[in-house]
Length: 131
Image (cartoon, rainbow, N blue to C red; front, side, top):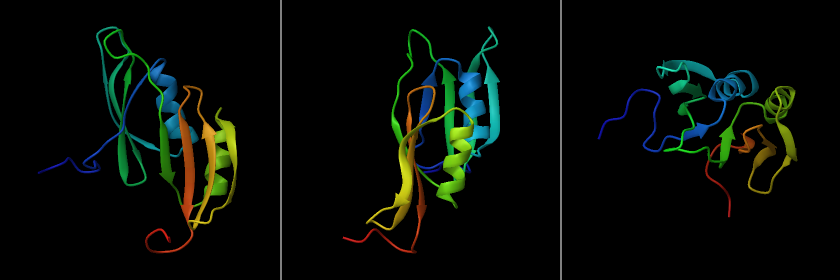
């Protein structure tokens, strides 16, 4: 099996209203890097790809065939406190303040303007989750 560079076997694909704004949030609010953007004839995003750390996510403008949908995502970052502040500064709403968790992550949660929840997490130790 082969996947493109930057992709995992499972890659989140967002169908959202106002895809341009959502891509801006991924870049400005979550520190992503845009890597590809293709447009529909009407100028809306057909497919945008944004690198978030070592993962790529894809975004498309919602349509009647593929309506907007919400989900929750777990995003590992180098600094949970700084990443939460960045997301909040770019329009996210606080779901849970950053705190040290018993499973050795420092984590907080935000909800973006499209209704998605982001669990922003910083791993505090090397290795797997402790039982």
